Length: 509
Image 1 (spheres, rainbow, N blue to C red):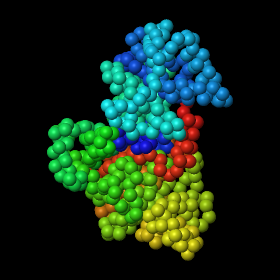
Image 2: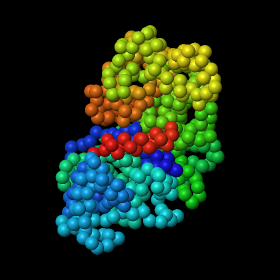
Image 3: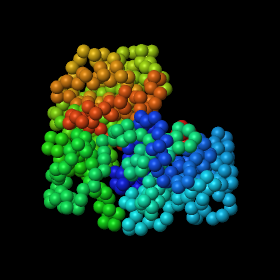
Image 4: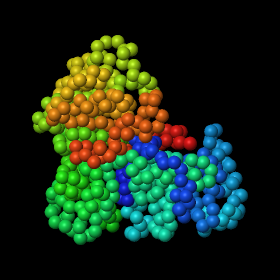
């Protein structure tokens, strides 16, 4: 099982990511050296040492700086790199000068009074943290798995330590944070580290809130998961439609985690209506992330759904499956779909293309047609392509879907429709405001996007994206009409995952 599956299976490791493809950045506070000084152990990520090889010497008396074996391996692999080789070689020069020739199996006292510790992955035991039993630690797995595993084992062995994970990788930082690690971003020499507050991290639509055994027994009084209900003691601890892990997975029994959904209407946590084996237009959820997303997509009382997701995480596929099934049930009269008409890395260039609206937008809407194939079968879609001349919008109209003209939506009121907006990270503030205030009676809108693929030139950082800002407003998070979730497990292909890792490495400091 991959790291991103553990996100919702163990000590939960999921709140993409600015890199993973489905980036989930946060606005960072002004640096606070006094806060950074309050920790006892600082685990340094590889990118921190590549940016500044001497970073492990920044700490003082009473503080432990920890480096994982995986980080050392990654640094070693960079020694001959034309761009990063100097930094890797300089780190090992300083490391050797600081630690000497002695054994590194024990903590090493450095001249500045701090302690250096190397974190390795030991044997797994029944009492090891649940996430460790789910992590894929094979040689071909995500390298971050091994860093996270070493951190989890270190924390279990040293529960008294106050640990800060220092990284530039927003994606990995989010995963670590959801495993209950505090994460900081270095801003300069010494203990100049940003420590963002919880409310300044991107909202994930998920939290961990473990219930006591007696509460779980009450919950399990019904064998039907969909009927589960538990009234919470402190409603202020939850947002409406937020997913809550109330029990972690148990590696010994093989039972998975228990995920419920909070509703303010009765101040209770409820079992999910979409089960792991539910089939929606021939599509079954492949993981808990997709299951949570489908829970929101299939609930007509939730009229505004937002999805952050990395490439290949299934955002468009499950959204279209849910929309088409609800269209079959006459819950909506029509499905509208749209995406910003923008070339990768460029401006809106729709006006430069020849032809009418259908001809101009066809290339952008081909991705919607691609997602019809797993729903209806490739042969049926191939036949439509042949009959209709491969015209994307005409093919989609055969299924009750109509393209929405984003530039002409001002003044409209779109009623009794399900509206799908893909690539929402590339919509401007004005476009989003115009679109979202057009949603009429009986309609639902789904906005999805990947904050790691922003082409708006005026947006310098993902957390300044208008789409990101909307999801993180208190008005959105607190409404019973809205829901949000994050999909960060890539399911498209191993090749897609490979190049996702490649570009994470290229784009990191």
